[in-house]
Length: 121
Image (cartoon, rainbow, N blue to C red; front, top):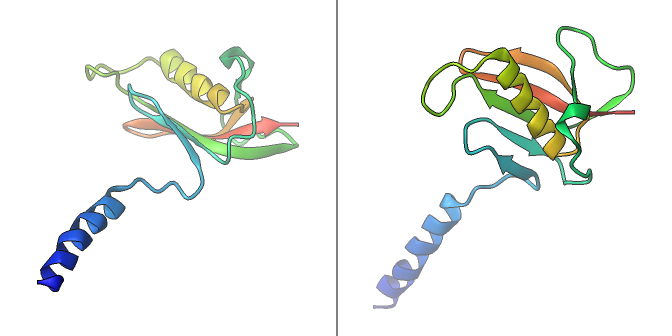
């Protein structure tokens, strides 16, 4: 009788624990239209997306700190491809939302464009 009572409590607890989304102390802000931004502990205030610079290729500013990661889906919610301008705008919006003023190491994959959100000093 006691064993079945313990199992009755243990199984729902295990289910709840395994269904939790663990981000290891990270702040996660997901975009409902695909992609998302993940940042370290939110220390920076959001800025205007127009202030964010995208650094393509191997160029990186001399002094910066990586504060998170950003990503934008290459297709919109209906499945039509987004223009590069729309994808760049989404990367900038996500970076600005976590306080980054730059994005480096931008990788354009088949389904998503990703990069590292940085603060340039």
